[in-house]
Amino acid sequence: MAVVVLPDTIALGVYVTQSVFGQPAGMIAEVMGIDEPSPYEVVLCGNATRHVLPSGIDFGELAPLDVARDADTVVVAGVVEPMKPRDEELINVLRDAYQGGARLVSTCSGAFVLAQAGLLDGRTATTHWLLAAEFRQAFPGVRLDVDRLYVDDGRVHTSAGRMAALDLALHLLALDRGQAAANDVGRILVSAPQRSGGQAQFVKDSLRADATTSMEPLLQWLRENLEQPITLAQVAAHGHMSERTLARKFRAATGTTVFDWLIRERINRAKVLLETTDFTIGEVAAMAGFGSTEALRRHFDKAVGTTAGAYRRTFRSSAANEAAS
Image (cartoon, rainbow, N blue to C red):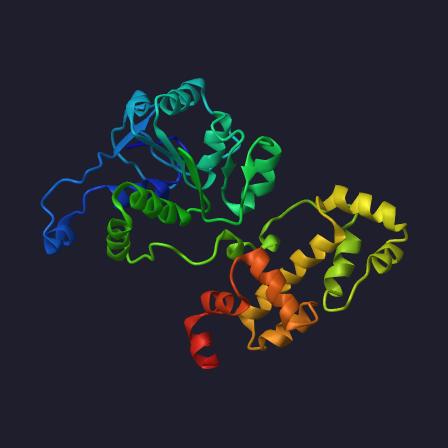
């Protein structure tokens, strides 16, 4: 298993691979009575003999990048500069590895590197949800699914944010050695072998600092009135334009329809209320503009991949959950 270490690699993806596929060390191995080597050989390789990563971490001497050409699995961890053009040597090594039958894996923004090599064209893949817009624009030939923690598409596997690297690693281990083995490693790492829900439950659009558009005053008015029933005619009238012009300008500014934008914003409002208040699910539904608990349930489950109640239990502090109980 070759793990590609680049000058801007995010170290966590490397650590996860070593933890899941490497040899348990020290007292853990002693307590478990493990004295046989791991069936995996994890080799860190790079286009230089050594890199001090942006985090200050130094993994020591690296094997030549060429070792990835003969590996069974090649892992590209997330990178700090996903849009940075990668050198021809790296691109060729990744392509050669795939052509030679290797399994290709990326974690987080490492998907941008695989995409630059053309290895995601025509495939379904995922990456960190915050980078979805940039990824889609750069690689329109890839079916990006940012709702999932990881995507298994044949011999190419991609995971979402940094922590989803562990979800994917345990999935790969289950494919190789069975679910029981993956469950045991998950126990050692104090991690569930499969987390419920997908990446969608972690999405919070307000975390993006996107540039404002000419539609911003209208968008702000919509946000201030999310709890009200809003029709397309009302939005058009407030924007002093026809419904047809509104639909065209709104999609140009936001990339979506008025209806879909409202649903997304109402889900974001519901998330904040679920995280920070003790209002009932019915009250949250009304305050977010869904009108009924059933409407909230339907839209929330579809968009977030979990129920509103489960989301609240996950994202509220333990103290708040205990007080609510």
